[in-house]
Length: 290
Image (cartoon, rainbow, N blue to C red; front, side):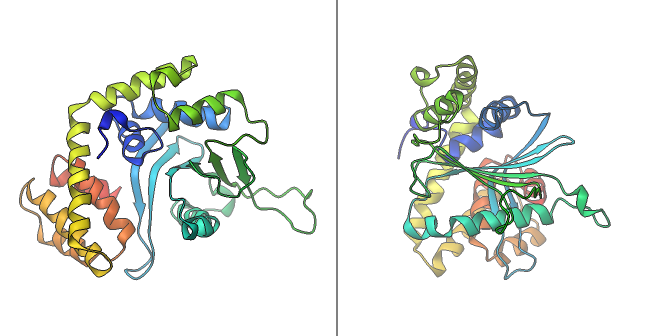
């Protein structure tokens, strides 16, 4: 187990802890997002470990690392991705497609015009090259096959950022940010913006609550590994969630039934992390309803 101080911003625990922090979450998320997009971003509502359930119990849900809702603006899903297994890389375009679909479905009010659909950016920060062209930035949008020059704007963007990419002449600020995210140390915070970000990262790493949550997350992962794989994985997650919540007080029967009935491994993993950080059952319930 690595120490909390050794984690980098490409590790999902640290990026989630940073962006969800009561003091530093919004400014840190803004710093990262503005550097990636090269423009100013409005006031952000940061929802870490946000998940959207499937339409039914047998349908797939999603867990977003960092969900950013710009006030009167756009929606952003920021994913720190180190899953370089062949099957994960092969599935990546359809994973992005599914994330867009879920985000779109949850952002349009009943009866609203389709033109009111908000722009959505799904952004992957990756320590491996997803497409093998050694580019730092791969931006994907929909267009017309027969007429690539035809203006077609549906408000959807997927951005894949490869931390080690060299091709494509990416902006220097972005190069510095991605290097820092993979190698998070003061020596690698070479701009004023990154120095401010590093101060926030350092403060979060020193936060006692974050340290306790990190220890809990490690204990949870160890328990799941001990209890086995396949059918046993979900049961291990459910038992761990109930154990963590049980330490906080009496679990309402309706909540216990909801947890034990959940079959989506993605959602259970998100609930586990929420349970590890929650300071009360009410806080956990509010988080899973957000």
